[in-house]
Image (cartoon, rainbow, N blue to C red):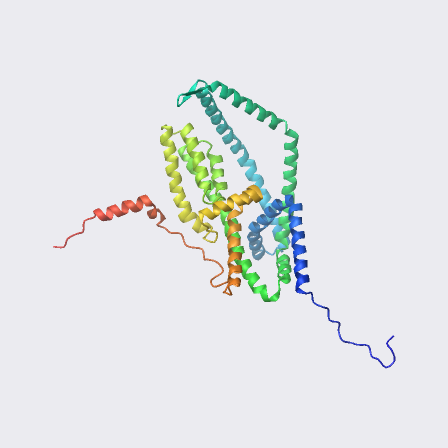
Length: 405
């Protein structure tokens, strides 16, 4: 009890603030712990990233369904995921048999190519006066292939375990992405509550800019890949390119590799055209390879000047050298997933770097709009190719002016 004649103090106790050194120490400890968690649970990161990607792509569909129907967020999310699973199952039921038949036909052609190479090597080869025994080379190659086949066949149990692990990770991705879509509003509000009030406006602006980049990449890139797959598959069937469906799917997947995907596809397609020719068009193989290359050049102009500006826009536009270096770094860090996400990651780092640099020099970090508006496609893009531009210039030069009498 308080002593007689003394009143108990009602002044609220003031908690002492942490010093700058304490804050710095705690921040470094938390950062080190976060780095440890990343390395300790690195196997979980790729499926988690894929779950975020899937949730980001599906969110607009859920939002659209929620706004136009009386369904709540949870029921709308469940309905969209059920529809997605149904579409995937239908595509697998229809596309897998066709893809297997196309791949089997392509495998037969590859076996024919191996037979031709074996016949060509089954005799002594002379290079600059030096003779190489082709039979010995064939024997070594056959031994290498047999050893590889034994290793592959001996890993049957590991393959089965890998398939089960893939199914398990697929379920993990679906569950995580489902809850990310369903509770998106609560997660956004929670993160905003952690941001200091003076920097809340900056955080929201950065989130909008980075969100525009990833939205343009994911939703636009998926749409672009589907469009490119349809166009390339149709062209391949029309001209008789071997393995039309696998080559069309490959073209769509390579759209996720800006600047180098087209070159990879053209190399593979030209090789198939040169060695095997058309499946129905009776023309020389070298001429068919040139036709495939010419069609790809025209498609590249269509893709660069019309499809990409129209579907994706220019938010992720990066210099080819930056993209190539980013793809190499992404492959070293994250494998195939790092390669696919290299371009939007670099574009997001560009947004953050511009913000940090502006604060370092006391400049306005947001001088313009959040992002560039979607540019309208140029209807005369085909007139800007180098060949047509040269022909138009010659036509204008040779045109004689009409003299008035």
